[in-house]
Image (cartoon, rainbow, N blue to C red; front, side):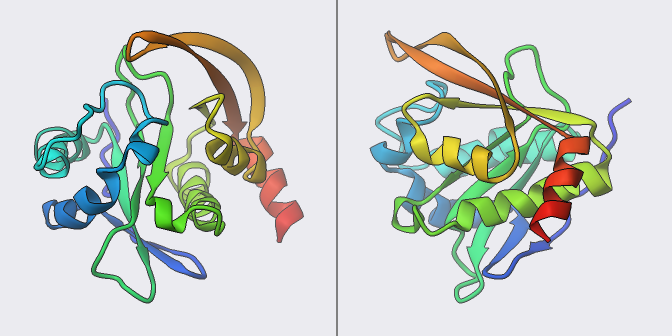
Length: 192
């Protein structure tokens, strides 16, 4: 039986993470419709990105999965502007056969290199392991996505192996990572 839990509002030093709403579509569309963001995601994301892509994704994919208890998605909001989401973090509470990872994320290019994603992921990991009670999560990133790799390294994930996937007609190397509740607890104790 699916454990249905509404994602809570999470707060960090610089961010609020709110459960996504359909109203977030315009700000997500503005930041996501960027090849430099999309090129690091799987090829289920269309390119060129449709003008209503964020709205359609929220309405037909993300929100129904949240309502069914299969996923939790948070919009990332800087504390200085809580009206405009600058990215997303997703936790797949119930993976489908096609899902290769349990948690995914993206953040607008203007916010890269500031440690905001590591901050957001830390809050979500605390929820996943301490409140939701997950024992472990599997994570992935394209090998060329240095920023995503750094987030995993900075938040205690363990590198497992590399695999090859098809991506928009070419082969790409994908790094596979794991983070266990035990390792997360140790990581948090060392960082506090």
